[in-house]
Length: 262
Ligand SMILES: Nc1nc2c(c(=O)[nH]1)N[C@H]1C(S)=C(S)[C@@H](COP(=O)(O)O)O[C@H]1N2
Ligand SMILES: [Mo]
Image (cartoon, rainbow, N blue to C red; front, side, top):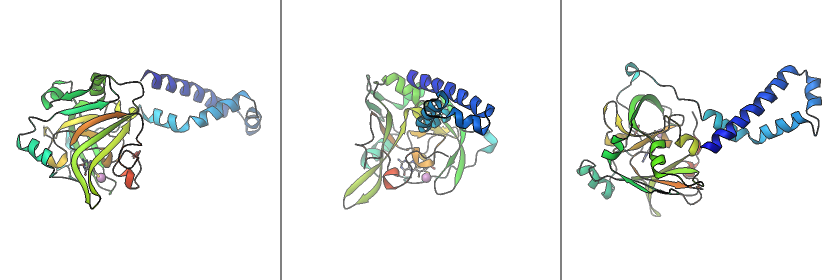
């Protein structure tokens, strides 16, 4: 986190200098300023290399729009898998998720196994946000949960943890080749974002099975398929290569964007 903040500050300083130069220069002055070896050119080149990273970092601080209770459009339309039939899941469901444990492992100093009670005892955040599915519909609902950042903080990340992978209970695909359970991943910018929560509540009630009970993630600046439901395990990894077909996301492995920004 410290490294990200320092990089961002560095970029803002460079951008400020480059921006001021561009505003003050006429075209001629701008050309001259970008001659090989000039200081301005060096600044612009380093800014270009940083573009992808800095775009993400700048977006990194923005909040998704939040709405009021009056804006809630019910019912939250369930989509994708809505009734997992996987035996492990059915067993948990039949006991009201009493024996549910969220596993947090991979590149962490302190692997975790947290019950719903433990998750609900942590400081909660509620937010009323819009869910946009790639299919073109949207819904507004209130989500209550624990910030993912707080859970990751408890697990104490190792320095090379770069992605958070969500492993789910539900089978999204059955074929002769076997079964595929839903999986998704986000980077640390979204993982540590204040609106990224592990939600156990929806519209002031327990999260319904259709919407991902007992725990689903909200990643408010991305499309619906990033918001993994039925989370079984959170794995911290350095690379997505070994996840699914290599892109770290069921839908990204089938041609959708991995970063599904809205
Ligand atoms: N585990 C799991 N998570 C999932 C899906 C799924 O099929 N399985 N579908 C995704 C898609 S495409 C969308 S739009 C949202 C739907 O969330 P909802 O059922 O709460 O509306 O969940 C996402 N997360
Ligand atoms: Mo979706």
